[in-house]
Image 1 (cartoon, helix red, strand yellow):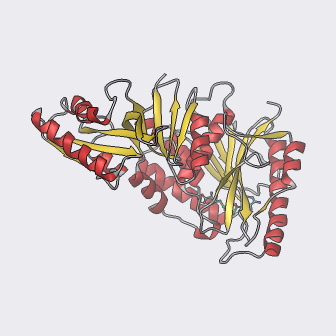
Image 2 (cartoon, protein in one colour; image 1 turned 90 degrees about the horizontal axis):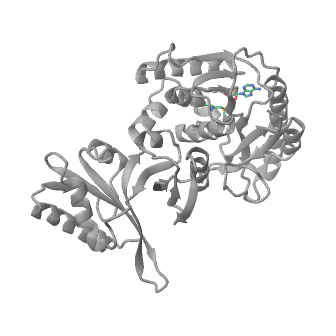
Image 3 (cartoon, rainbow, N blue to C red; image 1 turned 30 degrees about the vertical axis):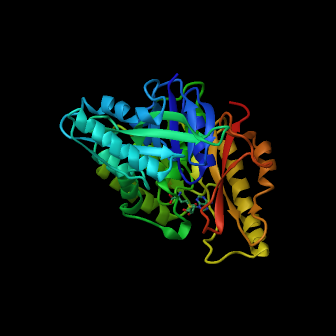
Length: 408
Ligand SMILES: C[S@@+](CC[C@H](N)C(=O)[O-])C[C@H]1O[C@@H](n2cnc3c(N)ncnc32)[C@H](O)[C@@H]1O
């Protein structure tokens, strides 16, 4: 079984849950320092797989032989770099190594390559590993321009650092593409809260995991009934998944349509290959959708955007209003899409003291015939079967809920 290290994003619990939902035969070995996880996969994972993940920044595959101590690093790099045509580029990504040690490794590796007659340059330095964009530009991910070696150390029982894991980087997030699809789309509505494309990817991955019956449809249809300006449908089209999208607001419907048209041109996605449809609909009313829906993935209304921290009283009021909407939506969805799983977000408000979350909705879930679940091996924190997403500066966070129909 191939083994991997994933360097994960700023919401580590979500990144881990996404890996558990997407990696076939996922077997967690260790979480390191909130920044990396070590795991086995039943299949080989590559850069294209990483591009489908929202929560992993860099993915490296374990070296099965060659490096027993840091002394072996220059030679291990030389083995990878000698076949590269012309000047080779290398880079180190480390955890638990002192900056002076990393600096010495860079220098020794370059000298060693020179002795072997291989001209080289390195990217990144002892303070900061190379940026994803640099790894892509210098072709370090497919090995054609060079390689990045990952070295993970931790303190052994005697307190001295011991080598834990070494591997080669095989994938790194395409930051440029994220910023294109987030910032360059024609319609951005900051008033309703902007869903980051990476979070949309994570939610879609949860949806695909829920929709497996037992194997996933090669081209599933995903429906977002609170589509806003369409981040979820956009990320679906990029994956080759058909997207259905609706919203109560005419402005959102027009905006979503414009964004999907732009995305199709920018990323060359033909309608004849991947279909999409956007229309106006109130998600608390019965749905009339003719297409077969595999999964509903949606960021429901977060309520009004807040300029300042809500008081506990305001938060309770916003919560009651929102709870009503969520209950009506779930009842409508259960009646119109029996057997179809749902991934949705609920708002969580943060007054000064305790957070305010939806409560009555859990009973509605049960009454509507759904069960909240988490991907395999992911532990429930507290008594809520959900995953939290919150940026520190936000007064309203999102609780991500994965609802599996009890009967399918
Ligand atoms: C948080 S926003 C979704 C943003 C979206 N994920 C995006 O990428 O822009 C929630 C959306 O729900 C819509 N909405 C609110 N109540 C609704 C309802 N009853 N039925 C359908 N849409 C509704 C709002 O118009 C808004 O566009």
